[in-house]
Image: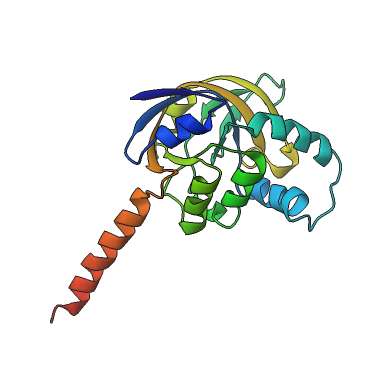
Length: 208
């Protein structure tokens, strides 16, 4: 088990290989579909003009995400009325929905890690090599357990997206993940896809 704390250096990322178990500590930011679409359209491709507090949030995110981690998570949060926020459930959501955006977001903000479940595709794998970064697989179905690793909620951006889609700034301690895509082109998800394809082809070739 490797213990890593954000911000993460390039050397630490390059030392990670597919299959490594990691306990992650430090600051990270949650982000799902709405957040990634907003970042791409407003600040990377610039197909949408900044509105409201967009520019202020962008400046904060540049500092928070530099060397840090994006977590694909739609948390259940208590204390919404008092703003004394606490994560009640914090399980990973399916990452492949962010495949069109993730590599560009990683490179633009120097994001070193992406946490989610289910893996991602070739574009993100290339982004992991170029940034460099890594995809870190979290435990699906362990939302309450993972929430216990969230030691503090520092704040939230873009609450207008809704609680699950907002960008929550959290501090974690010993968050357990496994490296399934590394900065050297290794992807456990590609291996599984290829082996599954061969098994399926074999089944289809059998006479019935």
